[in-house]
Length: 370
Ligand code: HEC
Ligand code: HEC
Ligand code: HEC
Ligand code: HEC
Ligand code: HEC
Image 1 (cartoon, helix red, strand yellow):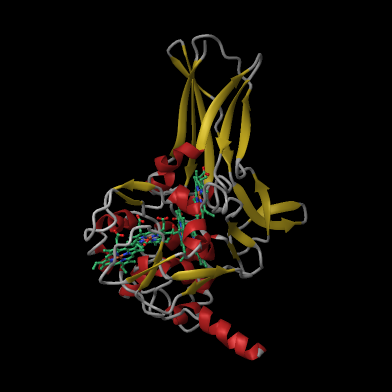
Image 2 (cartoon, protein in one colour; image 1 turned 90 degrees about the vertical axis):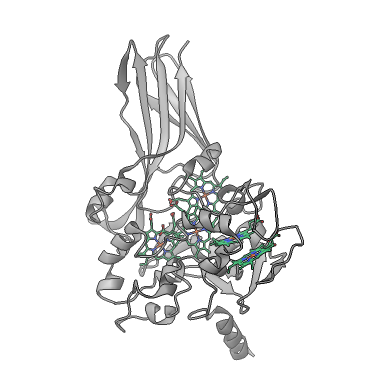
């Protein structure tokens, strides 16, 4: 019985080398969703299209020592040779000429996730065996002649379907390099309501609808202004200092990937001159314990968090500035994120990359002192 169960489980989980419809096929009837999706990191998650992922994989022992690409499980899950990519030392690494490896987190992959299960190194996606039955939420009863539509999968309402790839990833040492809290999954907002808002335009060109679910997946990449309403800034003035309060209402910490850095940049305009406050940097630093403390390391060597100044989920954090404001001063505060900490960017040879250097401002506020 136990063996039978194991075989059944294995059957469910074995998802390597399954066939998936191509993204391009979906574009025939869902042109607007396709256009948005193509700008997202889901469409650009491969070593060929994402320079940051490419640079980290390039220095990774998985490429250099093991000649494997375990990253493919989440970064190119529809590769037709996924099985071989995941196996060490068979000489198979990503190949730009393989069309299926350019599909990244494909439309059909997400829409076939029937469930996600907890896992030690990472969670697992359970993929439905039927290539043309797609899960969704839409209440309308329009049908597609190309595929069947299956509604009622709870994961597409709560965001559980996102957690197969986003919940956590441990390195070989069993340390979680990244993780995303799911503490808001049953609240008013979840991964889907925040990262896939409703926008104008039809769901398909076969039927006409007023709005559809945005597929550009804004995060630190992409149009971050779509997330601005979840992060607001206010000013508190007191006798010998002032504070900027960041009200961070995301259900997870202010950055999730250990490469990232957030910044609070504050300036004061007084008598036509601009006075700059020292910027506040926030990030998570991972590394190892040493004899006299701890040391930063790349993700594959880390065994612990050695510092964490990120703003936690649903938290208001106050930052003090030892500066006395006076009437007529204009204070400008900007809170934003960098894709890579400057030190890490240098290590991976991306210090001159424009996208990497750009501060992605999620909220900006100006306060006039009365
Ligand atoms: C369990 C799924 C999973 C696996 C396996 C995985 N990743 Fe990722 N990776 C993610 C997710 C999810 C993100 C987006 C997280 C975020 O932005 O906070 C990501 C983002 C990244 C980023 C940031 C990319 C950018 O453009 O900013 C890098 C770099 C990266 N991964 C490298 C790797 C490497 C190298 C491997 C293999 C050694 C790997 N990942 C394996 C899920 C995974
Ligand atoms: C021949 C046209 C056609 C093609 C090709 C097509 N679809 Fe659709 N699809 C439709 C129509 C029509 C609807 C119904 C839209 C509506 O409700 O107004 C639909 C609806 C959907 C829904 C909504 C389900 C729901 O109820 O929430 C999903 C998800 C979906 N398609 C995914 C895909 C994916 C993924 C692909 C590519 C693998 C694809 N479609 C290719 C025509 C198509
Ligand atoms: C209440 C809205 C909200 C919810 C719920 C939410 N997010 Fe976010 N998410 C944000 C905001 C805002 C940011 C921009 C970073 C910041 O300031 O927190 C963000 C950033 C991200 C990033 C980029 C972080 C990085 O370091 O690259 C990823 C990935 C992400 N969210 C995934 C998820 C997933 C998966 C879920 C569900 C478990 C989720 N989010 C739930 C608002 C939300
Ligand atoms: C990362 C996972 C993911 C990817 C990739 C993805 N989708 Fe979706 N899609 C979802 C989720 C979740 C929903 C349901 C959200 C909602 O409307 O409540 C959805 C909804 C839809 C709907 C119904 C839209 C509506 O307005 O109700 C269509 C159609 C669709 N997707 C097509 C596509 C197509 C086409 C692609 C690729 C171009 C794609 N999806 C890629 C997760 C994904
Ligand atoms: C098959 C794995 C997979 C699934 C399922 C998945 N993601 Fe992702 N997601 C990724 C990877 C990998 C990246 C990072 C790609 C890169 O930057 O190279 C990513 C990136 C993102 C980002 C952009 C982060 C940034 O830095 O801007 C957001 C936002 C996001 N995902 C949200 C979601 C949401 C919401 C869902 C569920 C509807 C979801 N993801 C489902 C693998 C997945």
